[in-house]
Amino acid sequence: MHQIAQLIEPALKDMGFELVQVRLMGGTRRTLQVMAEHLDRERTMTVDDCADISHAVSALLDVADPIPGAFTLEVSSPGLDRPLVKREDYDRFRGHEARVETEELVDGRKRFVGVIEGLEGDEVVILVGNGQCRVPLDAIKRAKLVVTDGMLAKRRPGRGRRAEG
Image (cartoon, rainbow, N blue to C red; front, top):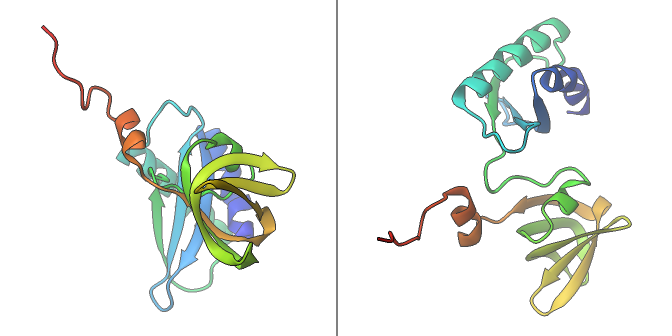
């Protein structure tokens, strides 16, 4: 997937987007998932944005042909429960709740759900219950944000407020 990311990332940046993740899923009916977001973090992804990215990525993939056989291209935004894939994601989403899975046991477990406190060196610091856990970045298999009521309230201004008057 690194080869595909390198191929499409410059075009996405030129279009004003940042590549979040590229994944090839499935067996016989494969899907190439391209997840992107606006470089301007205040803007939200639209269906037209996804269509524009899809056209650009399709053209690049048609020329380079990095994936043998047939596949379906799927372009999406990361959504509220976005994956945490880059080192800087752990500082960017400091204070948010996340679910982290590791390849090997860390502090006697492989799954952590807690508040991200950021990075210290090559470790993600997560507040789990009453204590801190330090998870080595290279041990993380999968990580994503957990959708919380607070997160939803920030995305929908005016929700939960009483009309005054």
